[in-house]
Image (tube, rainbow, N blue to C red; front, side, top):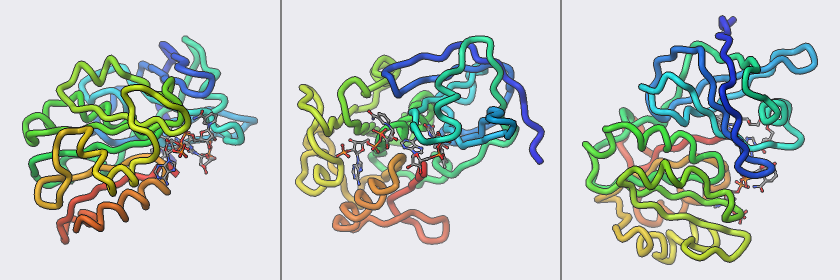
Length: 241
Ligand SMILES: Cc1cc2nc3c(=O)[nH]c(=O)nc-3n(C[C@H](O)[C@H](O)[C@H](O)COP(=O)(O)OP(=O)(O)OC[C@H]3O[C@@H](n4cnc5c(N)ncnc54)[C@H](O)[C@@H]3O)c2cc1C
Ligand SMILES: NC(=O)c1ccc[n+]([C@@H]2O[C@H](COP(=O)([O-])OP(=O)(O)OC[C@H]3O[C@@H](n4cnc5c(N)ncnc54)[C@H](OP(=O)(O)O)[C@@H]3O)[C@@H](O)[C@H]2O)c1
């Protein structure tokens, strides 16, 4: 049984009808950028908990989570309805391996996300480590519609090269289509202005599980494979479902 921490919502920002960011205070948690924690609400008399990645860097005492409403889901619809002053339960034990401590040194770090999979990379980008360890850091964010390209102010305040994809409408400044196709035909490297090779790159992936598979297949054609402690490779992944 985890002893739940009771926190209070400070702000629930709605970016679109389905995307929201919760800022909460009241929990002093130790975690590494890229990790997640379970958050919970009581729904119909049951405590419903789900994993959420920290958006905030570890030294920020205000916790932040970025979510999408899954209409048929149990937790995300009531989370999206929370208002300033409401209670939110947070587990005391952050976890997860999508962290730079698990990543070998290299020249270029690629942080590749779809949808809310952007969240852990926003935390990582706001720590000093990527800039100390990599010459290039490329953040890739793929969404269906341009209005879902969120946290632009946070991203542009970092030195990361930013490449966005918008798949379901024409969007100036963003690539069209999906990430795996743009790896295969070289458009991703051209947009980032850096090479994506087994010799120079490590890739962290987060978001839609089918995207994780398809990107890994595209990277396998470049000789890249999953990184394991005992068998070093080039790819670190976290699936959101
Ligand atoms: C390690 C980890 C970290 C996570 N971090 C985040 C996060 O930072 N932000 C976030 O929104 N979610 C995150 N998730 C997913 C989150 O835990 C919930 O699954 C999600 O909020 C939906 O909860 P639900 O109860 O409404 O629906 P669930 O019953 O949990 O999910 C129902 C279905 O919704 C879809 N789905 C679930 N999550 C997402 C999503 N994020 N985007 C699109 N479709 C989804 C899947 O098809 C899933 O089968 C994370 C999951 C894991 C395992
Ligand atoms: N985003 C919304 O407007 C919206 C609205 C209401 C509810 N929702 C809920 O949120 C869920 C997910 O929505 P989401 O938009 O956040 O996430 P998503 O479906 O994962 O889409 C995000 C991006 O990932 C791309 N993608 C999907 N599968 C891929 C693959 N195999 N390889 C590479 N790229 C891939 C999508 O491209 P494609 O467009 O080509 O699929 C899109 O550009 C929905 O199922 C729904 O429950 C979303």
